[in-house]
Image (spheres, rainbow, N blue to C red):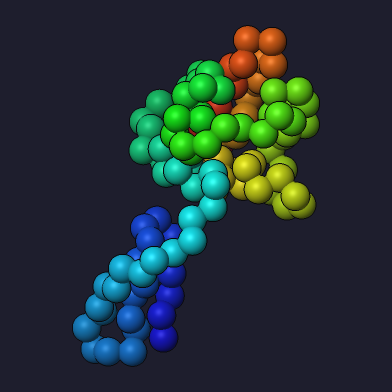
Length: 109
């Protein structure tokens, strides 16, 4: 049986006596690169501008991210897939400044 590794895009083959790692083409979510970036940070708080986030995800943020604070809510269910990326990385949005296009992430805990 194959199980998806929580951290890396690999499958572990549990059918053999020796675990065999198989890299698979996985469909990454739009915000998965942000999740991986945040997982690699060793600080308790991080201020990022929207342009930096767009560089990390290699896409523009949706218009709603620039207009509505609710887009930045720390919702772990529902339709806000973006928030699941930072929550899964162990971070939360502490504050967002829509005027200056800044977001402050902080480590959960």
